[in-house]
Length: 441
Ligand code: NAD
Ligand code: UGA
Image (cartoon, rainbow, N blue to C red; front, side, top):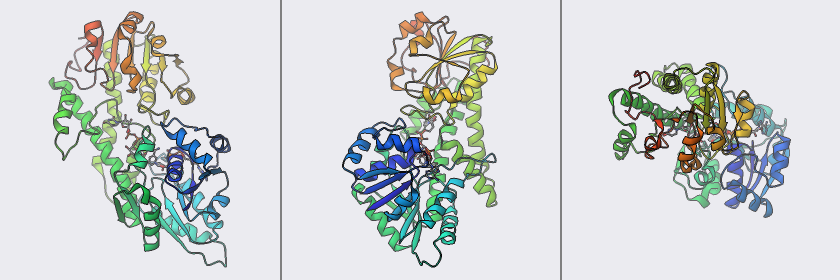
């Protein structure tokens, strides 16, 4: 099928490349000319494992093209995915300016039947507004048929290609048989389990899923606080809970809170949608509060164990909001580093791929070329993103390089490495090996 993807960011680009890989002819559109220029040359502007090879392959076989023209892509496509950003407004609402803008541009350029699909994460009922926008902006005097549908995306950054190609389910919100059949044709090669529903339910499935996952993380972060106070180990608690198939082990990792471009904004948006509908989703407000507090607790622990933070040199390993991505959007590292800078600390940091993006946000810190350069002369080290390469470090060397061998492990990455035995003072999250009020203990 001829398919257009409007918005070639993390989701749009992965969707476009993967749909080409399974046999469709795909035009990816973006307003960012520099991005489109790079993509035309087969260069991926983001870090996403496996995406580069598929991009090059499908450029070469001409199933994939890139353009800045919505008109060109709209006119030659039957299905048009909208995959632009839906960031948070100050009040937590999803900002749908880009979605509206794209809907209008699709409408004025239509030349026949189109299936217009929301891939972006949007509040329930956006589909109705998109349909209305398209209807109002169709070329006058032309009777053009179209369907609007919702097809939320569940991929995770860092494993996006795998997730797209092996979906747990594909959710489609449709209001015509024709739209459903087109979706079935698009996704046929993946043989997915399909959930077919109306548009509002599909939109809501996405916000409910992300909010539920965020809630799972906040629940475990709360458990980690209790563990610290009662001498229990959150890793064992997660293991013990996770064996129960009704709970599952995934997303039970306590740490420094969730970040990224989606959970924080989607939880905010879901709270707002519920409020507007007349329901106070107080549970979700607590999920958000626990997430913020988790970062504060981590900073307090560092302040407590360092005693004086002012002028201390703090090394940071990992800046991205999670491993295997260069994405710094709402990364917990930003709040933690800013809080320590506020206290007068000097920060040195290293991340395998996120440093170019981090430099645009964290301007008052020094960036090291590797973990050893960061560790040299530090009063303590923080592990903030659990990159695999950080597990393989030479800790004897690091211990020798540091001024004080204190390690705060915000992801429990080193829980089983016996770092205390080689001289480290080691603090994980929720490990029950300390009491939060034991000053200097
Ligand atoms: P992104 O910011 O990486 O990409 C959005 C792209 O849209 C940008 O490249 C931007 O230049 C482009 N754009 C904006 N206006 C445009 C226009 N008028 N015409 C053409 N292009 C335009 O965002 P993202 O992370 O890909 O997220 C997109 C949507 O997908 C969001 O709603 C997000 O919540 C949702 N989502 C994201 C993920 C994820 O892992 N990042 C996963 C599932 C769903
Ligand atoms: C998340 C969802 O997992 C995807 O299904 C969804 O499509 C996407 O949001 C989206 O809507 O954009 P992503 O943000 O890429 O994907 O990453 P996750 O792996 O979900 O991690 C999110 C945050 O939670 C990270 O900061 C991670 O460190 C944190 N996390 C995750 C924990 O603190 N503990 C866990 O057990 C799991």
